[in-house]
Length: 155
Image (cartoon, rainbow, N blue to C red):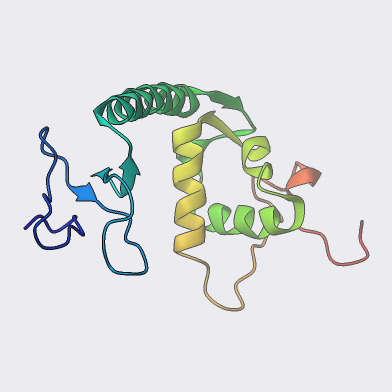
């Protein structure tokens, strides 16, 4: 018996083309209409519907791959190369992004999205120790007021 089919005893559990059959079951426990084809967690009326579904998914996956490639290769022109951001600077940008929004990473960092996002992920998944603060004085961030943290009421 096909594990994806709910075919009652005496009914076929697989279509001629090999798809599991899923039967609508009535209150009496018997099939209440024609079976549907089961594919990737969904039911379809026939093989043609499945083929359309496959083509759409293929096109979607190709479009997504092209979009992801273009997104990763997008270049931002911030103050510092994304590949040069230190762990402490990443922690500072994390705190800053909570105040000013995620786009502050693209103000501070220059380079590819993929590099900037790597820094963001590192800063969020490896957060600073409790009580840590960034001493911005005499750092490369100190010359850019938009990269300073503000205290409530300072804005």
